[in-house]
Picture 1 (tube, rainbow, N blue to C red):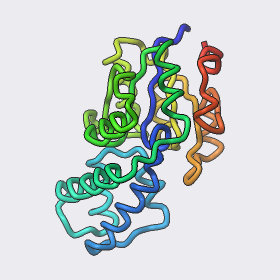
Picture 2: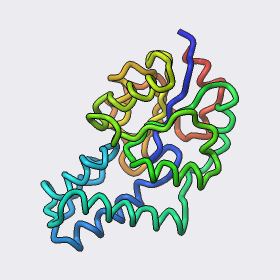
Picture 3: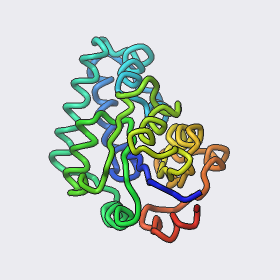
Length: 218
């Protein structure tokens, strides 16, 4: 089946944000009466804003309303991005190359304000036809909702989309939706072997994501 679009995850694929999220949320949890867990970072990868805000309060013990938790953490993320935007090395030229051949979209667990901040900071917002946050769908990753919705907005069948993902939750989400997945494993929290088996291709880094590689999946 001929490919119609490429959908990128954002965190860990275009921007090295997982360490920033870790630092900001860990500091927030400790400041507001909670207890950080060893597996907290992996658990929250790909989750919607409301899902991770609920996790910080219900599971980690933060003593603030969920809406306030989300607001303060996102504001701190914006401040960090404003100081230094940690774009993944090689991501910008790859996006620009692929945009000359396919329609591109972003489907991310980040709120829209952070998606836009990253793409504007990298001067690549114009390369993407559709931007979707899991905040806009019923269930975040690993549920398939965000990829189904992104394909709908692109006006293509999800089976004609390639998804570029780095996390276990993201890979499961895209595979369940019916897309073909190119996995670029997150170095800090790599997916397990069983999850990686859901991907059509596994690449070492985004610089290896060429038009020729994408065409090999057609």
